[in-house]
Image 1 (cartoon, rainbow, N blue to C red):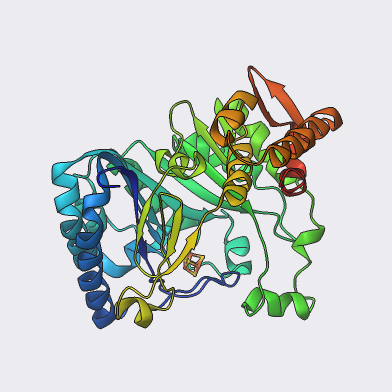
Image 2 (image 1 turned 135 degrees about the vertical axis):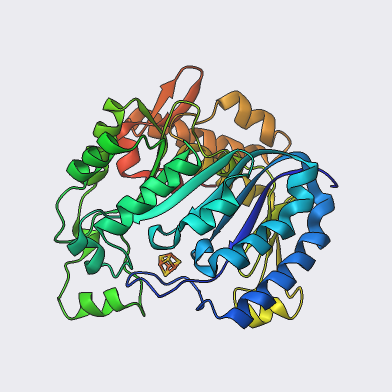
Length: 373
Ligand code: SF4
C-alpha cells in the first residue's frame, strides 16, 4: 500500500461568505480556526505521507482556499514542503475565488511546480453574479484573470449554467477568450438545494425552477469551445489539447487518492475513508467512516466514471479483464444493458471503445444508471 497513491487533495473549509446556492459545509476564516486547521493538517499529512507515490498531483480545493490570506496560505505551502521538495509534482492545482486571488497570494504560488489555477468565475455579468449571491463583479474578475495569467499559462474557470432568467453565457465567454488564453473550462448546471437562500427565492417565486431549463446552454458553450480547439473530455469539463486536469483524471480512471482536511475523502485499495465534515469533529481526531467498495459497487463506479469521460469511455475487453471472476450472471446482465443502450443510440462505438453519444450526454444519469447491475 505504501508509495502507491498518485493524487493528494487538501480541503480548505473556509469561505468569506456563503454563496446563495451553496449547501456545502464551510466556515468563516477566523484567525484562530485557521491556525487550528493548519496544525491538524500538518499532523494528517504526516500520518499519510508514506502512502504517496514518487510522482503525484496535488489539488488544494475548498471552500475558497485563498480566503485564508497570504500568511496562512504561505504556511499551508510550508506544510506541503516535505512533499513538494522530495517528489515529482505532475500538476499543482489551486482553486481560488477571483476576489481573493491577490498579488500577495500570487507571490507564494509562483514558485510552485506545474502550477494550475482554477478560478471560481461562475458568471460574468454583475447582475447574474448578484442573483446567485457571488462575492464578485466584472472588475474583480478582470483583475483576477490578470493576476492568474502572470503566475501561470495554465488557468481554468468554473461556470454555472442553467440559471433561470439568465441568457446564454456564450457571448461573455467569447469576449473573455478574446482577452485571456484560458486552457480549461468546467461547466455545471445550477441545482438549488434546500436550506439555501436560493431555495427560499424559489419558494417565493423570485427565481424560476432550474430543473425546467434544458441543456442548450451547455451545447452553446461546447460549440463555442470547439471553435477554440477545446475538447469535451468529461461531461462537465473542456480543455485545450493536453490540458485535462490530471488530478481529476486520476479520480475518473478509478485510481487511489488521499484527501486531507474536513470532509475530505480518500480511496485506498477498495476502502473509501471519509473524514468528518464538521470542523471540530475533524480537529479532534480521526473519527473517519470507512466503506468497503464491493465488486458490484466497483462495477457501478467504473461505468459511471468512465462514461462521464466522454472522450475516453471504455472497451468491452477492459471491462471483462477488470471484472473477470465476478458473478457471470451480473457481467452478462451489464453487457446486455450496454448493448441495449448502443442500439438505442445513447451509447456509441468509438475507435475500439464505447462512450456516451451526443444524445446520451443529455440523459447521462439515466443512461449510466440503466447499466448498473
Ligand atoms: S465559495 Fe464555493 S464553497 Fe464557498 S460558499 Fe461559495 S460556492 Fe460554497
